[in-house]
Length: 284
Image 1 (cartoon, one colour):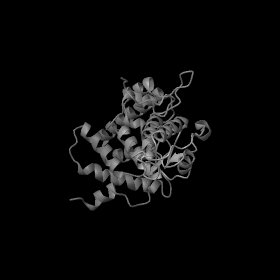
Image 2 (cartoon, helix red, strand yellow; image 1 turned 30 degrees about the vertical axis):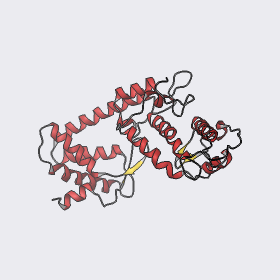
Image 3 (tube, rainbow, N blue to C red; image 1 turned 45 degrees about the horizontal axis):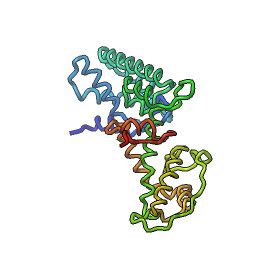
Image 4 (cartoon, rainbow, N blue to C red; image 1 turned 90 degrees about the vertical axis):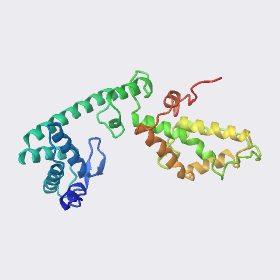
């Protein structure tokens, strides 16, 4: 059974409801993370009282309420408050373990920033260890002519997910005829560069290579007499956001990639949303 004190610690209902992340994002304040961090520190020195971290988390939350009433604390502010409460409540050994853990995490963040040539670490960077990020950098992340990174892991997985989601638009019954009984529409010129980042599926914007792939697919299905509408009509539907419902398909692939439940083959990661656009691993 959960006590009222535990509910207060894990589900704060006071003035602090948001926290500012290190990368500048503002997120929901999750008090259970405080209890979890304290518990890990306590465990590392042989602690066994699982209830105590939740009680200490409540004290941390109350301290933050007093200090940041009407304001949004940063992650560093929260961690400083944890240290203060641990020391003041007589848990010096746990405080030391927590401080050491905090320093280790800071060193890991610093190393990740060096690998990715960034000043901050976002939520996707956190999902991968340093060695995995080194592999992404060496093999897949886009670079300029001088070798400097111009793409983050988050941007990589976004471009791959968007590219993979493009075919879904063509199987929409408003535009696609599976039986191939349509008239072939006249060929139309198109400049992907002109429309780069101006067309979106939901919140996902298409770069020029996504748009090239879209036109290429349209032309293929048109030759097969499977397109019910002209390219002009199809593109107008894209421009008006009439395919926004397929955003969820892109979300799904993006999420399984960043959580490492699934990873596409090397050509897809390297080429989707890039000039080559080729996802096949081999040809016969």
